[in-house]
Length: 297
Image 1: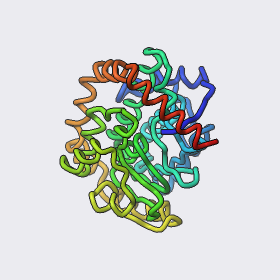
Image 2 (image 1 turned 180 degrees about the horizontal axis):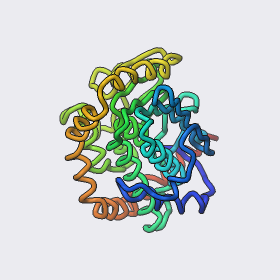
Image 3 (image 1 turned 135 degrees about the horizontal axis):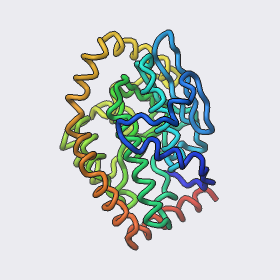
């Protein structure tokens, strides 16, 4: 979570509706360029010879997940999903020392219920697009990845993290007085099991790379300067498997978790808005913001 003020682009926000319907291709995206592209906050390099795209997050200072940034992620993932020649996606960061600092706290503090609902719908959509992707996906975690950043990495099929003890990863929402919703929990249970998830979520644990490897939160540790090259080499192993067999297997493993959110999206949004707008929760978020301001000063 990070403190970051933003000016919202109406043009970008209007495109959110084009990626709001899970599994439906939108006409506005068909007309967009399918190869290498760079937006203000996302850079995508697609190598047609290998069928692998690298998506670099570049939303300064710490890739915090605002509505605008989530929208751009949504749009870029859908563009790649539409291009059947793109078989693999590597997600990494272009920001130093951080993969993603997670959900932008300013999207949850002092906002109208309507704005909170729109933000949460975008968080859901990001998870749905990545967790259900037909592409083989690898998170090249080259920095700290708390909260929503951890969630994003958990949507991927494989996670490679920089072996730097200063970096951390985990769903630490409770430390801010926030509760991770059921589909955050389900995603983590599917990765590390029930007991490790119970401890991690209640205590808001942030794991060092070595600890994350031990519990299974990440799959591999490598020197920091080898994260992306290792992800590229590892992707070739995933793409050696026939697409249809891998995709059906992935769907079989993940479909129950996806279906649970799909059948409860509106109630999940309602629960989030009701919770996040409570006075006690807003007070906790306000205290956290004040702490950030003092730390920055």
